[in-house]
Image (cartoon, rainbow, N blue to C red; front, side, top):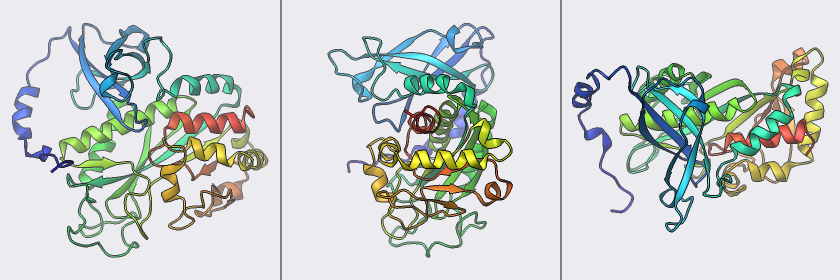
Length: 366
């Protein structure tokens, strides 16, 4: 049947380990180039051998791939170029091997439609004096190969939401081994992952990346997503970034964006936070379009005003209110400094687009 694949976990991982123990030549490094494909929400990767240990992205060669197979080019003009932008340790191949995050450029050396890092970097450079910090809470859902939520009954539903959030126990959480393997792998790679927890819907989890300054937010989150997909692959489980994977009274999945500037973090920074909220209130539609790959169509299923979300049609803000567009944490309101949380970005949002539009609205007033 179309859409169903053989269970990847059927391969014997012990056999793989026999080959992975083979010594690797000291003068050879495997560099896995990772990039965002034409969907704007998934990643691709391929590996090449280099004869040195790269310390900066500029040392690495520009590479190319078949963009007609990634929704980024036509077959008659299919070469798309990979420009290395960030380097991470490889938690899968270990040793001196590296993961290489890349930007994608068309044959005319212009950014592809899914390359939002280019314009994000321009915005971050322009706003550098504000010292923008970000933290993103990435929610996701684990699925079996039949695309049913992992651990759910095949002919029914688990009990109502309530016991699953930050839960403990085999009847409350599903897939913790995947989550903990991802956490350790991300730390090893050098991603600034700051935590993880089970979410409100069973088989749904969250990890947090940050605080990161400027462009590093998007870089680290995209690499964390790649590592998550790769870890789940080893377990024969799929990762969904769908903002509303299950209809009805089940929580959707977001990528809440925590944001602050240097002024917000200083004494009486609450005044700067309030100014930022006012600016955000005037640009609600622009932000909604930037907060999922399909200009709000995905988020429309999630932002209903129910299940801990605001309405996609209205802007709102409040202290400790998870039903608002912008939440000011209780501790921030009491200390009168800190950060704000934009709860509107969808789980499949591009962090480059999210952080860019936040900075352009609040710092650059563009």
